[in-house]
Image (cartoon, rainbow, N blue to C red):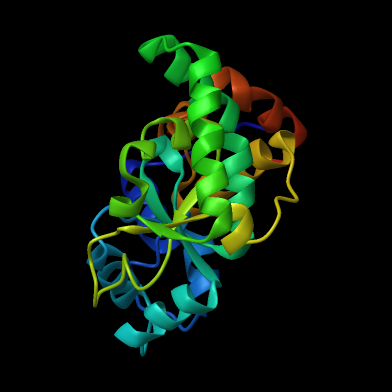
Length: 230
């Protein structure tokens, strides 16, 4: 069977529909974030405005409550940037991107792995006791936390009411223990991107996730996907 050819308009309408931008819908906040592949959220109000744009009856306090109840999580994920995702998606995303993030860091920064590990473990021990502010962490807050462990931003910081993110916790303490594998995470990245932005190329998925195409190719072979031409 010949592959269907999609026009630019068809791709445009599909993207807007998948991003819930053609009309507002009624969905729980975690489910909406899963549908659209999360929201990039360096500036805390971005998540609130992004959800208000998409959800019928959305109230600002609803997202703050979801963050406090931990059904929604703020963490450093796709492309090494802060994203707002559901609790269910957090570990799958983190596991899918971990190896690529570490390899990039060591290739570009060329640090001594032993030193990165040492600093990362020191930070882990401190955060294992209790969540801390950036000021409390002092010199311990450095790039190793991005490559050696998973740290999340926790309320009240990173909310509409307190936009500066200065409270941090270990993801394993705040979200719960990781229960995902790298293979599951890579498959999930492909599913979430195509669900939120597709139809799209594998290069598009890789660019969004910050993961090399070669890492994702096995996922495309494992998953049952439809193919189109542009």
